[in-house]
Image 1: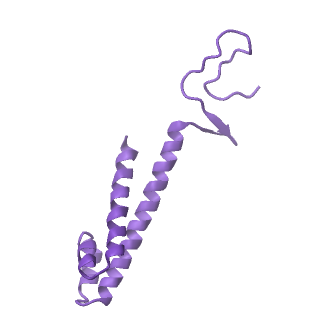
Image 2: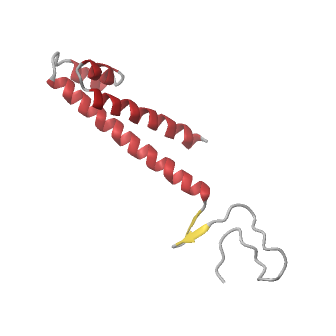
Image 3: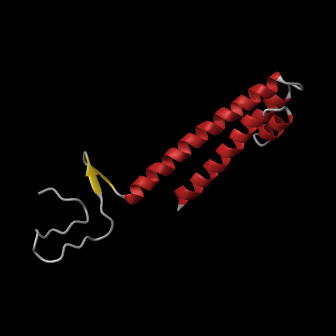
Length: 115
């Protein structure tokens, strides 16, 4: 008899059918419970938001290199907070908004990962 973690070891009709803690589901040998699912969501949020942040940062730096003054592009690569600021000044509002949004989501995911 295969049972999930938290099930009673007693058969049907043999006493209480209470479980100890949250019910876990076993899929292909992996036990997935509520907290493991939250960890997966936080991990995905971390990876996706960091990738979006790096992509937006490189796009902003490249765009700033093409705009006048050209020295802002390379400087923004090494001083990241300047990229969205100078991007807004240069008219790259969507890239700057994506940069800030990705940073906020990444920061919130880091906080959630520590909990």
